Length: 406
Image (cartoon, rainbow, N blue to C red):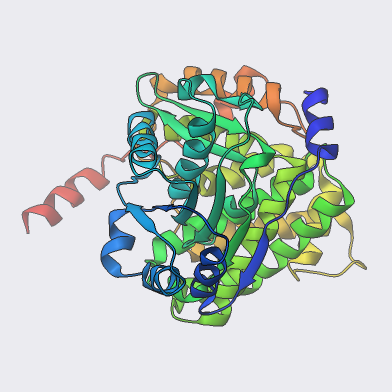
């Protein structure tokens, strides 16, 4: 793990050119059209395609004389067979570049396609650090959610449906060359997606800030992201067409992406990945549910860091006691989840699954993440158990039946 930490701290990681603001997806199309690509593959999902969100980009590409094709079959947690279909589509149309357009699944699928096209071997053999010898094909990115930060990160998470696992491909060469943060593409997001993706970005920033691989650069990015999220997420949730809040959330997601690319994540992600692999829980929602529980476990080891986060979130000032500030931050995360309608439990979670989930989460965290406080198998099980659905009381059952009958 220390070796991996040295890699993430010191290996050169490209940073994409960012185009920010309304209409930036069209400006990105203009730029790409001038780069002389033979044919561009746009990777997205059917909803984005049907809503016409691609129009500014594709019209700019056409105006610039660029050839492109659209693969719009991406589903949440894109599984290996679907990504293979995207690889075949890329090769069939003789493409030489990719535009990832959509949420985290489209971004991750694009990255996986780019690596696999250059390194033709089974996708599960590309999981891990730098498993592809040849450089991935060029990627450009247009995120339509403010959460994953995938437009600036070195990793792609894909689903293995056979083994019910998430696989992580890590290669700094997958970082997109350019990205457009266009808030107009996010104004139609449903509130529950705005909430889950926003807390996903918050989780990235927090885990990067409290982990043991932090740097001055990652700290700066993480603190900026936390401040922007606490300032703008509630507005984006309640007033989805507020372009200023959407743009600032886009920046927060990107800053958090910069932070965890260097400093990595922790137990929240390790557990969330297991929920996604077994129950197909959306990643942002899984992170949002587990964040308060993991933070409360880690609290004794990160009081000072939590205090700094509280100041960044404008919950207090540096003149206050660290313990007071730390508790303010924990309480504020709980309150934010509540305000955003994030559930306190995972409906799909079963007691019988918890030992295996904990084992897999501990393995992932202890072999790759710089966690600030160590969990044993038993402790991890106890933390996951906090997310079990609350059992119905005898008094609640008749009431529900009566309501249903009515």
